[in-house]
Image (tube, rainbow, N blue to C red; front, side, top):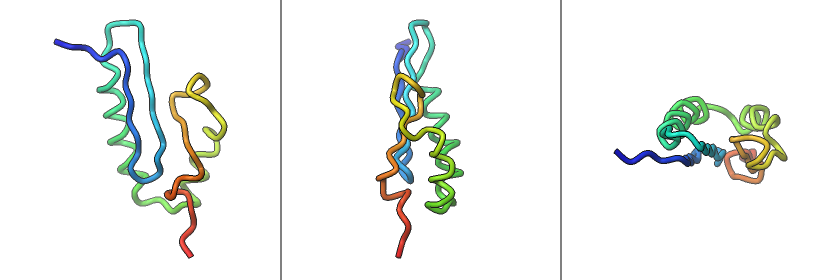
Length: 81
């Protein structure tokens, strides 16, 4: 059995990235996949305003500060005109 010590997932709707790393023998990719499935179910029905409100707490946070990194320049956060 191969265990992935790092994990990465990216939301297709808002571009939020979720990254995990461990020094222990735990499957991080599995946790990232679970986060992505849960996040995308909620994210697909949100408006850009609701997504920005959710992302505000992660704005400016780097990979060292938070496992979730968002880019408010992503098209999922832009208002349609």
